[in-house]
Length: 303
Image 1 (tube, helix red, strand yellow):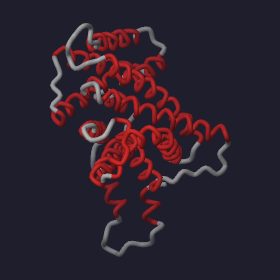
Image 2 (cartoon, rainbow, N blue to C red):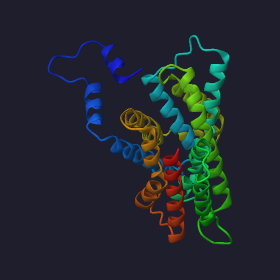
Image 3 (cartoon, rainbow, N blue to C red):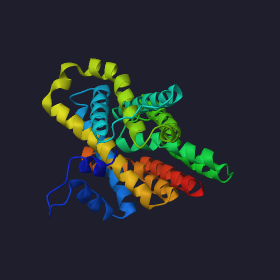
Image 4 (spheres, rainbow, N blue to C red):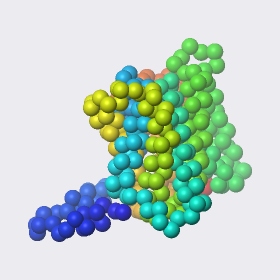
């Protein structure tokens, strides 16, 4: 259900006053599609930076629960899941999508608690990179695989005393694998569920999956009004805003160009980590990020 259908069902607006939905669409429409992609990436990474700041008060699993619960609540209001007429296979696909979404976010936040943000996103980005390479079937794409592997080797803490650790790398790799599954499942769910109800249904499933872990680890701190407000902000920045903006960008630009621009995400994460969290990366780590960004952009372009 779109914003327009929600506003139109509430009755006519007074003459001379623009509808909020129309004003929002006009504002988004005034931004070039490439700018929308950058805005979506920036929103996601600022949300991740805000979430990492919350780790001082809540464990990562509790922050994940707040993020997914807030995102699910907002998406359910905007696009209520419509389950009538769906088969058991449809519901099973939606449930698998939700479980993948929950595990992906939990793994990413556990990695974020152990690694600088730019490094975490760089490793996670191997998931969509692998999907792009697998879809191409060109021998030259092995060069992109080699370049990405070089970047990951540069990140590995081989006997070093830096802030990197194997547990964080493992969590980020799990998140990357879930991201690859997320891409494949999203196509299947999009064909089975009407509109955006597949995503809102998956978000509700993810809340059920994460709730036992998040509530147990967070305890009564989850009832703190300030933390609840910050968690809602993380959900808005990390899920609702980027999803809406990306949909608009995809309507106005080729998917290949969209994928190439999304390849900037690891570099953007490193910059946001530097500005928001004060995470200073070494030259070797920046070289690793650049390797993965170039590999992702190249693989997406050839696909």
